[in-house]
Image 1 (cartoon, rainbow, N blue to C red):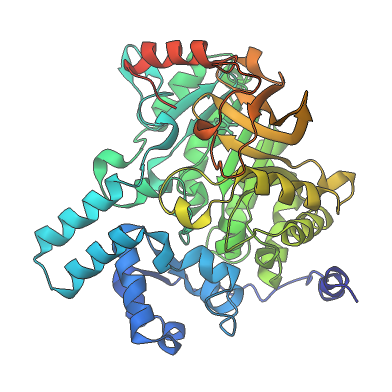
Image 2: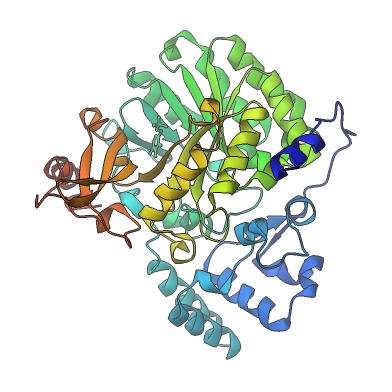
Length: 462
Ligand SMILES: *Cc1c(COP(=O)(O)O)cnc(C)c1O
């Protein structure tokens, strides 16, 4: 039997789980020593984790530890890599500096200074997120909203700026390190509603974080229910970005307000909204537990659509067979594959990034293995300053090897779907490392993009 068939055999969704509440238990940096499963590791390995967890956010819950990680396959297990800090996530120099500060029992100020210095070297705000995209109402910048693409806004509700566990590769890691000036937050639903009311061209609201599904249902309702009023008719789609289906599926099964959450979603759907759960899945293992499957089924019964996305990550899913199996399973469970992302140039990217050429090969070999219903996943896509740039392929044109690229989404809608070309570079991992092909000195969008950046920020941002 092939592994996929084996999985299907085991994959009958239980009709009903025992619905008694499961306690949410979570561990952060200061509780690493309390995690029973880590006691099998050496003193040295645990120290390495503590060094990295000083710099990059760490948070893991008992469900992930007990049901998603295979502790007989440490450290290679993909979910272990996804949630637990690894030495290679920092450069050798940064790691040594941090380790030295901890070992020498330096005073708190020196340790904190070391932490801050290293964090600032890790490009905490990629693609000019904090400078570009911040909308204004009555001349004042709105905290907690980003408006980059004409039809879609991102909203970061302040109570949703944490997750049920943290991903080691997170591109928004700088939001979670307690440094106020690095954090997006939105105090008020009112500001969101005002902005939406004033901008009738916005059809899509994307609520994100952190993870909005850590919020109580009553908080979510305060943001969402008003959108059923006629003045918000133009907001057709409500997307909720979440990793809860992977990290805490009990959110839809047995939490105290699980049923209220499902009722809220159903109400939005019945009222004519397209509600899309943008589910982050990095590996098919996250789909394989009984609770995860019941959660998916209960969500789908409300009428929401579940779309799935993930970056391509070395040490986690750098393998076409892993993607093929994941997409295959997602389609079978009624979900729609949406994006394969390229890991962004921030945080622990050194550890996770793969060359663009490799990313395209993984995408292609994975797509070839699934039916048309799984080929709705677009990518590999870089969410860069100018927009989402997809690597469509590698070709040879008039004797020159090139990347064929296109915008899936762009600051200027006119850039979308126009093929453009970059010199092939086997090492390149991000857009800013690519050079235009055929001896051109600029990409077609470059002048206009630089003008936009100058206008908004007074400097160039890639
Ligand atoms: C991806 C993204 C969106 C949504 O784009 P779609 O192509 O509609 O999925 C919106 N805003 C930002 C900043 C994004 O990165």
